[in-house]
Image (cartoon, rainbow, N blue to C red):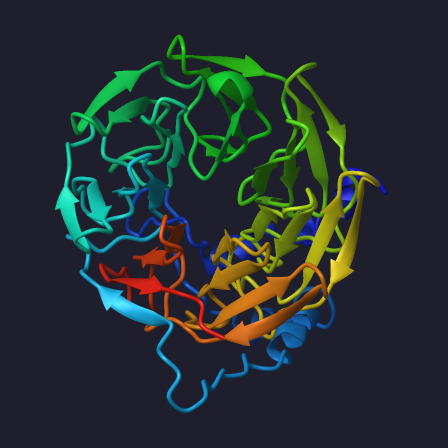
Length: 411
């Protein structure tokens, strides 16, 4: 199928999409160049038969998420912990080598990064960044430092990158990326190299790709993807290659996927997904296959969140549908559990969610389990050394959240 045919929405709908506002970029509508977080649908006089209207009706017909009711006497799965010092959404959370968690960005006003200590359950502000930012990437490097790249400052999308040293609690500027970008992916590959793909640049969705060499602190451009993407996902496969899936341009959502080979520096197609999706979850299973779940059919309002899921098999190079989630959700946070199952928390359907579901690769089905203590989307979920999950920040239907909770699966 030609590439234009893989767009979920035709270019004729661009004006409609833009008029409806933006997605979960973590930016405010009042910020120059930022996207709105509106979730409204087009006005009645803009609707027509077919196309986006049919998609909206299909989404509206989805059954609401079924509530999980724990048995009498069941211990709660989620317990509140101390809140962060600032309300944050679209931030990053990085598990440090010593078991603490570094949280960066995502606040309305510039605020210091902070560290969660599982031993005390408390948060401590750490060193100020050189350039406060949101919608950046954060990658823990082999030496235990953390690379934060790109994102948006108070005024613009930035190319600058800086490295956090947990030993001293300090930030140091390192080489800048070849171009400014936010909403990109960052994947640690062999040799301490971080591969950054796509995202939003000053000119829209990007196909460009670059690599950071942690030994020299420098960036270099590598082969570009075949398609510009933002809102996509990237995962490291067991053979050392990188799979990029879905995402969108401002012309529509993508069902394409492609694989980067660090040895050759080249991209190859990775088969068509079962449907276009952006802002989805993607995670590598224990057997090397990749689960892609949820997301949404549109990059911007009315979004049209999805409840479908699919698996990519590197051996066959094909995508196959698996059981659907109990309800649609985008901007969720997946975790690979020790037993090989995948747990996903919160997210957004027509509104922020507190539900939690677990995917079983042996049955290819989802099960509802106990939910979070409050609704949240665009949050982070970090698996701690003791097996509990730190769920922090995000948004409810009123705005950013400073709250955090510890979740432990109880069945």
